[in-house]
Amino acid sequence: MSDRPDVVFLTVDCWRYDAVSRMFRLRRLAEESLDRGEAICQSAATPGVFPAILASSYYSAAYDRSGALRTDTPTLPGVLGRVGYETAAVVGNNPFLEKFRGEFDHFWRGGSGTEGGWRAYHYLRRQLRQRVRHRSTVPAPSVASRAREWFRTADGPRFLLMHLMDPHEPYYPGLKRWLGVGPLRARRALEQFDEDRPAMSDRQRSTVERLYWGCVDFVDRSLESLLSFVPDDALVVLMADHGEEFEHGAYRHARLYDECVRVPLFSRNLPGVATTDRVRQLDLAPTILARLGVETPEDWVGRPADGTHRPSFMLNHSPHRDEQYLGLRTDRYKLIRTVDLGADGGTETELYDLATDPRETRNLVGTDREPDELEVLADRLADFRDRHDVESGITRGTGSRPESAPQERLEALGYV
Image 1 (cartoon, rainbow, N blue to C red):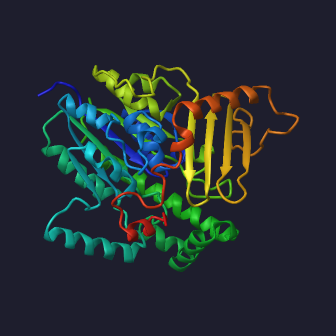
Image 2: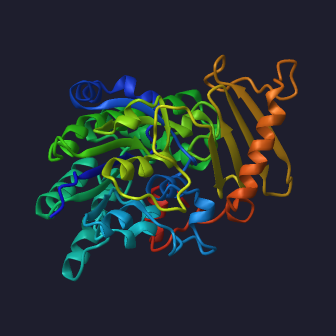
């Protein structure tokens, strides 16, 4: 049995960076035992971020042409498993994490791993839950229960990933909050949100956002139980996989605005993370291995966090909008290149001064305030595109039908 500490990742889907201001229970918990910071995502959706989180890689290189995780991609659970860790993932039913099933000793995704007669039971139970809630994800308390059960029966050291889906659309914040909004009002707003988001009325938009913030409150009430069984000496990362867009008009999570790529980050027993204001998701896995004294795979792109600010490259593909995105975020500027893959085929360039315009409302390209740095930033972004298989790999693994995901689950999560 190793004397290395346990490692626990708790990731929250669609968790915006400004949500922490509304989560007083989390802030109280952080004051007692967690270091607070922020993370910058390498993509804006689950398929794109988890190669960065679990494999310190950009997804364009981590996935093969079929969209599956490449067999030669070294992952954090795989590396830890080889040095004696037992590994598990307990997932609130996000189908895109299915790509990583083979990297864990134990993988549970909303009952997807059950066998025999229990499979029918869990299927019927999920169907009933979906009818009532109009969604098929597993709530945070169930994730906590499953994770606690595995954690207490596994021999140490343990690596545990928990992934929550509660703030993901279609937003169901629990029965009490749903009734507080009004079931008919909520249902109509969500139907419009699903069918034609730009055509929503102000009232519908307000209703949808109220439901989202109710989901955030539900997570806030659940976090203590999710961490209650974790030892004090464990290495802990609590973070969003990505955020959620409300302020730029397209909604969901695809584009590279800070609403989607700047997210909350809390940690424990990770000094490098604690002293870095904004950590790239790429750097978390190398930081963990450095803390454990385990050699980092040569293929990994990230480096252990050391308190310095590092420019963050980002990429994503949206099958819904038929667009692809490349971005570079420095400590001062954000450069975004959007390519329309449809009939238009045009490219849009956006540049924001994050120091004076943190909500990214004033595009400086083509204005009298366009900085001299634009050309330098554009050259760096082009170099990134050429070095990380972006040209051919930016659509890999981002389609609306991930591996082993039934159609009804994808529909319930808004992916199709």
